[in-house]
Length: 158
Image 1 (cartoon, rainbow, N blue to C red):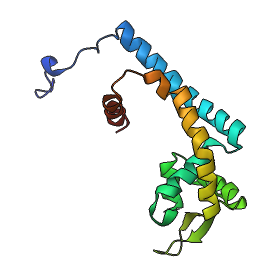
Image 2 (cartoon, rainbow, N blue to C red):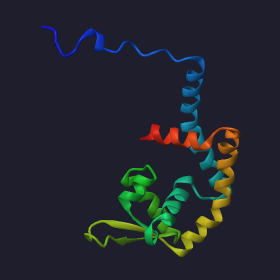
Image 3 (spheres, helix red, strand yellow):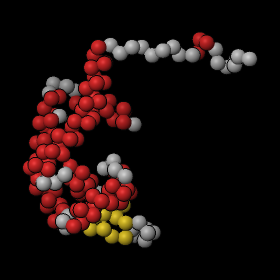
Image 4 (cartoon, rainbow, N blue to C red):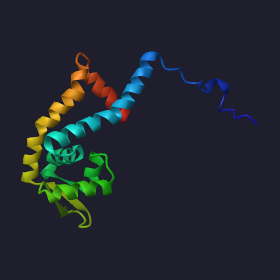
């Protein structure tokens, strides 16, 4: 028996095909999602001997209250698994850029804390990261409404 709450008129039809500009945008975006992080990472590794993920961890810690984050929050900020982030923090800890301390709330979790040495390393690497972002991405957006683009990208990510 047909469902009376579901009429054929309320069933959406097939989606509209992409026009050539939409198709090009989607294909380009797909390439950017993979190519941009690789390009930034290659520049950071070559110029600073600091992989992009390590730079990002230092950056997020530098912006956090008391320059520290729970490991799970740092993993989320860096879009990594907790186990992957643990490896990154372990490497940074070995270089003296980060130290791990027991969480004050429950004593079971760990926090990553940016050291003064880590902050100095971040400040040293920042110009290379900025130049790389400009060269590989921002310089290609000249003339576009960056505020509108940023808002659109945030909406997509949400």
